[in-house]
Image (cartoon, rainbow over all chains, first blue to last red):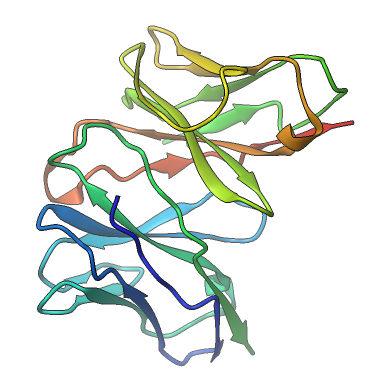
Length: 113
Length: 117
């Protein structure tokens, strides 16, 4: 499986944007980039995913580099509720059947009031 | 719509015992995956069941097993418990068929916290 590299932690002030980087230099052409987050004392929850184009949803935006070797999850206005561990995961849904998610260490986001 | 439910939420066992954990997926979901989360190893994939068949398996010993019923509910069993099996066990459900642009979003339950003494 292609691997991802994320910073261990990041801090942000409330209501400011947060940019979470993820490096995936060995990404294959059929790897989708997925982001999940895990709030304290909860199971992970899906945030967003993309293949080549930038993506937006109600929770966040995903900016994907032109060469796809890196991506950035953007939380436009961080709230205290966004304090969580954010995981960047590559999933090849074409080659590999099934739902195996390979979690790395993720980035712990601290939001200061 | 109801989310993924896991029972029990907390469990205390002693070494050598066995344990069965249960997961009820979201209605309509046919895939159930199980994960183990520990402070040292993070989140690790155990196995996935789809339409009552194991479709994927992680690198765990044979003491960890699972099954899925015709209503998509799943159970996982750990036999001969060891201290290192103390962890949060999470299950996740999804349609399992990669529907369109949404891909296959997985919905996680709150987990079962297992403590082995």
